[in-house]
Image (cartoon, rainbow, N blue to C red; front, side, top):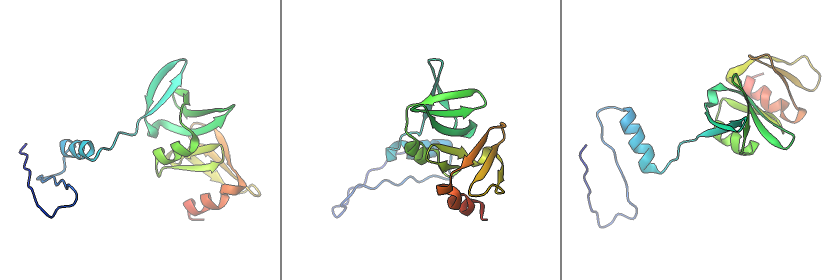
Length: 145
């Protein structure tokens, strides 16, 4: 890898340009390191053992008994983050369905809109959750209904 530094007198803020023949993992990692981004790691605790969780493995994240829990095929993990922080970290495949629950849209088996004032959500692991009235319009918008 070749490194060049150019000094321009009128430059107000340093600018970094990466020139490459194609996007590779090495180039992406270099850009991430230089931009100061930290990887979005999600750690969960189960039986006093901490594990890095892959967001794609998570069915739902919910608050219960003053704790925030993540449900995966491997079990339920306690998280140290708050739901609003997780909502930001988890990204576009996750949607809040109530004040106390966020679900992974890729793990949803079906939405049952036949209930009056609410929506039943069935997850691929057999769990059932309900969209609170406050979030019904948001879910309908996500579904395009």
